[in-house]
Image (cartoon, rainbow, N blue to C red; front, top):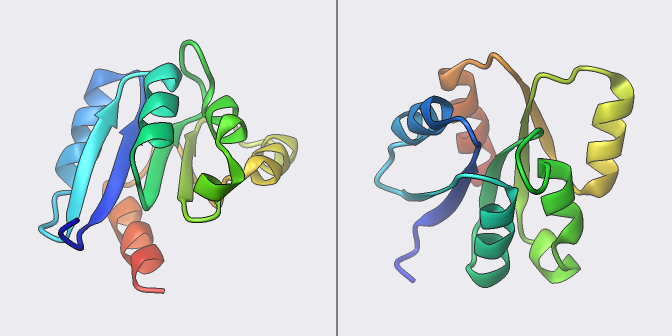
Length: 123
């Protein structure tokens, strides 16, 4: 390991993934991508990540399904930012109970996301 923070971006929308990768360009971070919930679950289960930015609604597994299926040993060391168009309190409560630590409403501000991740990594 080279000491850089590892981030997994998971969204089924190619344009949003591209935007996220471009937004999170930072020499102190390594950014990887997953195109759906199944790929995200595989990567999170087999590699070490510090943070995941994951869409709520995706094929195969939703972002919530992915987080719920992770073993506790992985969730304990993983910050989770959920990108979502869902804004109901019940949705957020359910996601928080599943292990989501932060929410970002779609459409989102790339600079606000960058600032949130920076603040997570400097804690």
